[in-house]
Image (tube, rainbow, N blue to C red; front, top):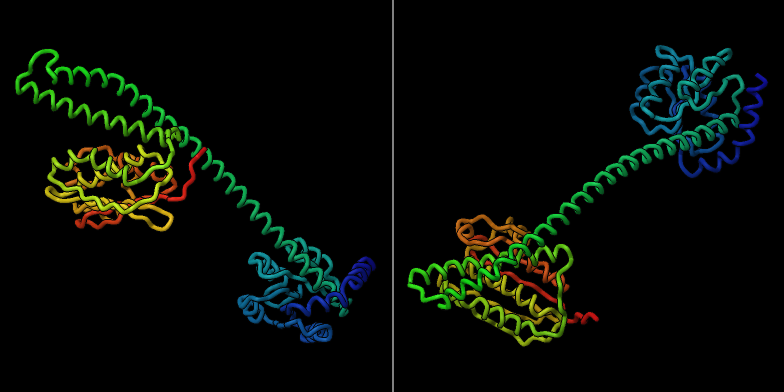
Length: 416
């Protein structure tokens, strides 16, 4: 008992006034489980005389204890080892398993071994009834709450550390997948670029020879031969355009697109694009109407912007009804400039609009499937506009035509 008294004397020095000051800040709810009313009264007297911040709940029977534990909100449990119906050790096991609150066991004379056992079972501390004083009680409560708080913090730290390790493992795995994806994308881009160059090489002499045949350098052609040559040249031109688009998208995705930024006027690019698409529009009996506002010069690549506008015009004509019209309009919006192209064709459902700017993507519609193409035109437009610091969008509804717009900054400075 001498060792025990020394332990409590140390506790008394650590507790007392300091505990009283700290408990004033936040009320501490203590559940006292003891079948002896006199002991419960003694604990109540000690705590009430020490500080009003303690909230005390008493329980002497099994049902009372269970109800109090089920209600929750308990900060600390004082549990007598020798409880009727269900022992204090059994209650301790339940409280520890459910992580309800820290437990201090209350021991009677001759219960030392059981008290030590309770510490192994998960109790934070124990108090001998025959040596209980106000200071010892306050000191034990203080130490128990601090120990519990520290243990919970350590458990939370371990839990967070485990979750962090799991997330790091997931991140490493994802980064590995990203690296693989980047490598696959690079390989795809290189393949498209190399293949396009290899395909383009034999096309030039083929086209030259066909044009020489058409011009009669190798003898006069009859009507059927002329028509046949026209069909071959037309499809050869389509193949050239396809290869050009593939080269463009591969260069853009690889960041190797060459741009020449200089002062230019968008209206000039629009006019050139219209000229390039006039024959196609005339073939479908479609009128291109231009509404060009007075525009300031901007810094941009005139050839690439003409290409972007041409792609948009071509798309609008392609998906317009015959004998219709396409309207191209330029506007000045504060410091920005805008180009919009409107057609009155089949339109695009909202769910499909995001697909349009992805490479090799086309909308599957009865009319759209009749139109040949790779689905690269709008993807190229998007990349060109974004490289110029602008953005492109679509306004359309199914069956009500389509309006494609892009906006560019008018105050972009020329790169040195």
